[in-house]
Image (tube, rainbow, N blue to C red; front, side, top):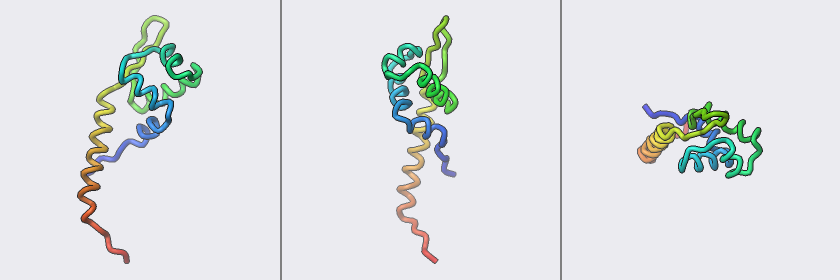
Length: 102
């Protein structure tokens, strides 16, 4: 049975700012202040995007005093990669299958 790709994860990564955040977090764990500086986003806007990424299971938080650090969950990206790889295998196999029109 072919796994389907989680639409919440795709939606989360489909936004250019969120994809930029994920790319930044792939290099290092960053706090909100760092992410605001790196992206140029307003803090409230950034917080909303981080909520989407957290709810999609792509990032997790780490409180540190009055700051919140964010880190990427590599297993979430690995799972997504596996799902897309399975779709690619299925697509190769499906090339030989053609449903007849009625």
